[in-house]
Length: 586
Image (cartoon, rainbow, N blue to C red; front, side, top):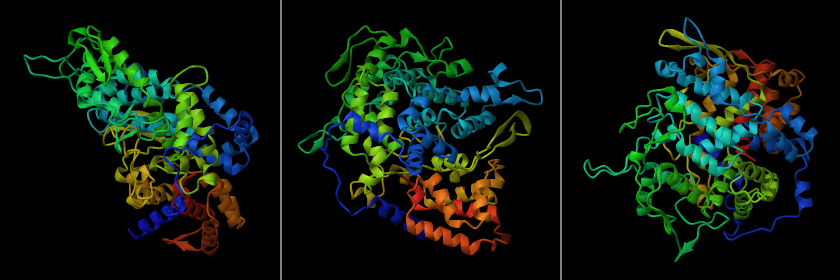
């Protein structure tokens, strides 16, 4: 507990709490000139390149830092990433999971997803980790992960037995990561994973004879969490106030009316059961089908002042409702703020939000909702590239547990091992993976594994000490420091029960770092770790303390083991990655 309090106090110190100087809520800033903007896009140092990659990928590597410096500008890197083919998770599973012991390959036996659903749930994680670490389309995958924390479905709940529908859903996020937000919202709405998770798959119109009413779950969340939010916003994301109070964007009446829109959808198996059965792989992965006899065709006041006319069929009503949400003035700042938080900083200035929201409104070619343009605007904004220097008291975001581990695996080129997937004692499929499953609370977080539709944390979350200073840190609500320390040390040192008990096969490659340790170049080793892991943000006193520790312990013993060159490197990596300097992504 004492260690966590000390850690948190250092985080507060790094953010500069108590220093004052927060922006006015009405702050706006005029765009800089084109020439000035282009000059900001030049990669000025290895440290800047590393910091940029920490926002745009699942973690910088020495090779990617060097390549970005040689490329010379961030915009060129982004264009290469936009052009990279998508890595799909379902395709990974079908390619890698080879049947053993007479079991057919999944690509030839789709109904095995039902037969072996418990075991195949692990392929979802294995695919995610392999693509996050090795996928060449790093930006697309990082954005898809961000979207998965906004447009949430989860294995925790009714999707638990259906890994195929979760894989299929995640691939929708991958496919649309640089596409149009309106099309993404439509694809998410029609996906059976969302339909089952938020209980409108098999949602029937009102029937007075049996007393049923349309389920309101998705109707509420598609507004509150996926598009417009609870309260009216200015273009810079700050709330519109009336008599000092925020103004709701919709009422309970609108929720009830919106629920009627999402009637008449069920999985594409040819039937409309009251409780859709999800019985086939096709039904769990193909877009939901419309069943007009079960759709409410009455007029619907879905938002204040917005009414859908009577007589609309299922798809017409849904498309009109989604378009109304897509074009709502709240949607641009709502989406801009959340994506900025997931990629760059938890406390963006209103001016930053406004600049990104303006790109959402119009990408410069008259197109609304262009996510590729929005992502580009987020990552190339002056606040993203210069915020650590110009707004040190407010800039940065706490790294999520998933991003700790992806960075560890990427930075040190982790290699997976052969793994045989079993159900009970029966071997089913063989493939190479990190086998990063089953670590319980110490794994902290998983893609599409949040406990609720509100994700692991909400955008307004934060400890009291930060919130009283007008700051948020959503990620700090996720876990205690002890859990991530245990996980990291288990992975780094390979001796912790976490690593051995669950047969994790991620082997770090530390040759370059071990050479520095062998030559007793301790400060050079620390500088290398600072560059790759911290983006050059490590404080001088932290560097000196880590270097002194390495000098005094090299050749000694710990836990009965001699601290040789590689062991020393592992200690150094652990010290850096459990420090506040690393925890706060800048």
